[in-house]
Every structure is written in C-alpha cells, then in structure tokens.
Amino acid sequence: MLQIISFFWRLCLLKEAPSKIPNSIFAALLTFGIYFIIDLTILLNTRPEQSVLKIFSSSIIGITIQLSLTYVLLKFKNREFAYIPAICSLLGTNAIMLLILFPFNLTLLYVENSNVLVIANSVSLVCVGWWLAIAGFIYHKSADVSMVQGSCLALLIEIISVLTATKFSIS
Image 1 (cartoon, rainbow, N blue to C red):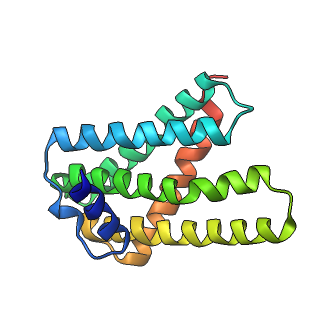
Image 2: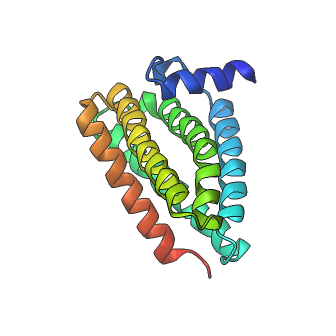
Image 3: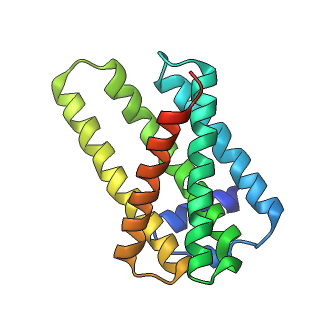
C-alpha cells in the first residue's frame, strides 16, 4: 500500500507516468473505491448542510462524468488502451489532493480570523493550480496532447462534472 501511495505522490510531483499503472480492471476498481471513500468522507465533513443522499449522488454523477469524458477524449485520440491507467492516475492523484486540501477546507469553514482565512484560501488556490498541472500532465501522457491542452481539458471536464453533479444530484 505504501508503494501505491508513493507512486501517486510521485505522479503528483510529475515524476512518474500514468502508463506505469497496470492496465487492469482490479487496479481501476481499487483506485475508484479508495478515491470514493476519501471523497465521501471529506464531503460529509465539509458540507454539513447537505444530506448524505445529495452528497452521494453528486459524487457518483461527478465521477461518472469525469470518467466518461476522459474515455471520449481517449477514444477521439485513438488511445483507448490508456484509459484504465489514466483514470487510475486521475483518481489516485485527486485523492491525494483531497487529503492535502482537507485541513484547509475545514479552516475555511470554521475559522473566523481573516489572516488565517487568507492563508487557507491562498493554499487552496495553489492546490487547484497544482491539480490542474497534475491532470494536465496525465492527459498529456495519456491522450498525447500538450501540457497546456491537458490542463485546459482537465479544467473543462471538472467544470462540466461539477455543474452536472450540482444540477442533477438528488436533493
């Protein structure tokens, strides 16, 4: 398990390639399961005003949109063989970024000191930029696009999945 976490951390540092992940359904399901547990846990703790059903449905919808659009992109680029390593990389690195952001999200929710809020907000924005670089790198390696195109695609896919999950989640 430590090797898997280490691999995803090196991927976050752009020192590994997504193609080194085994192209197996088991790896995809394991990564999805771990990501989903982390995602739900963090959302339940940072969105206390939302029901469990709304959080669960918005997570499922958002992940489905992201995975589907990633497949469409790879199919368009004729690189379907890179789908499982790409989604494992995206979900694994996203799980790490969620864990890094968790204390800052709690700070933004519960701290009233404006100086602390500025720092937490700044770190959150840096992490969003870092995540765009990571996802851009993954799309660059998986879909054979430039880093900038990969980052733009990652941002676009994220916006579409968030808007769709927000609009169609069960209240």
